[in-house]
Image: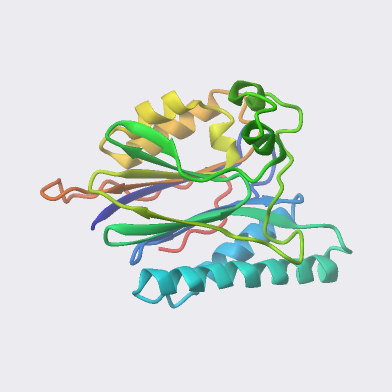
Length: 260
């Protein structure tokens, strides 16, 4: 299947450093968003280490083997980030969330740790495919608070799983089907904390992912945009659709990594 892919990353309206990193490997494709934590020269480096390691993978053509390669890469990144923190940061913790999508034909696999997300738009219905690894998300799943209460909860920034924080890390894995005309949105929390699902659905339902990406970014920047904003939109083109690609990548302030 052919994919049309657009990316955006921006420092936002408040922060001075972009700690997010993006990865697009078109050949598979492999898409990834990493949201670094720990401040300048910590989160920024952690997120970049993850996408650099993923970008260097000689991915097998078999999706399940490629999934194993990616999972092992993330586990190795976890160890390397911990060692970096101990060696270079005097024990200050550096870490990063990660959300990634590996697709091969009509199958794909999501791998993630943390609260960065993957959404899928299918038949004009938007669905979140990943579960947030966060304290507030656990409270929602346990029925202690509502989704609306979670959006403004004072502990919404506490995540329960990330790469580079603890020696042992579980990578969440989910296999999914891929249909023509599916649209996938991978994003850090800087996006979904600024706009709601209805706005996402309306914008990414447009046929040109590049224009959709610009509109999403601009909408976030019209709001407080207290965090870095990073996302990838991938649209699976249907048979007989226009083969002319729009400009596939648009990087704004704070680009860290996006090999093509």
